[in-house]
Image (cartoon, rainbow, N blue to C red):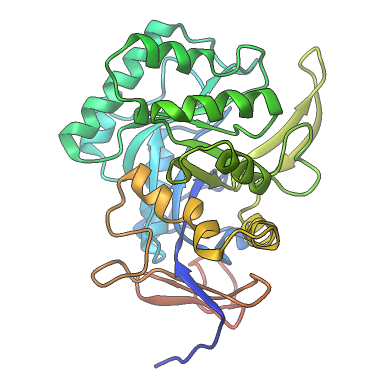
Length: 338
């Protein structure tokens, strides 16, 4: 028995999307968790980014199994930035249907100089594969789209929704707060039934966009459906900056521990804590069809995050086992030193 005292308890956070760089190997596919993520991580969803060549779906699936071995609930997407997509079975449908951790496609890069510049037909074919696989399995079957700074913005998604029969919920745009014109497009797109995703960027990486908290408040004030708005950390992913010729000028790393600061910003601006938590918990669980996740209730998974009055993480439980107690790591990964 372990007694806890805190002001706020929430369902464990669904951390979409965690991008890991470590090699997964050893007994039962075990893998060490990054220290910055383990503080509040209970349900990671992994995706490949720019480098879908030296890293692939095989290693991502193995890593999801490794995280499950460490006591977490973990999933991933197949594919990455580029078309043709990297897959394990040879097709998107095959990966989602036959590989338990795989629940969708992503991150497929759109309006970005690093993308493979997919055509509308290629994009729709990928979305169809994901959607049908989702129908077969009951999984999310979404296409998680990395949105770049390109002037075309969300035009690919707008055309897809306007010209095909695939439900709008299949198309999921992320990084929509990276610049203001993109965010305005995303807010309009959400009216068609899409979920849109803002990134909780670390300090110093927000400009020229807006913070995830500011994006949520603006979206709500514009009359957007709050249950269609999610926030992710891009934990472990690169945060590069480029000049007008595409040359790399700066490099950062996404951190999952930006969530407490983001929650503090929301509550300081008058957003009630239950509402502030929804983009990290219930909204994500609904989008990804994680039916036993996202809220505290009877028969739901025992994933808990306990926050103090300053929204700092005090305790974390994943699948019924304490991983953090009193702000200290209680369960370490196989490759972490005691």
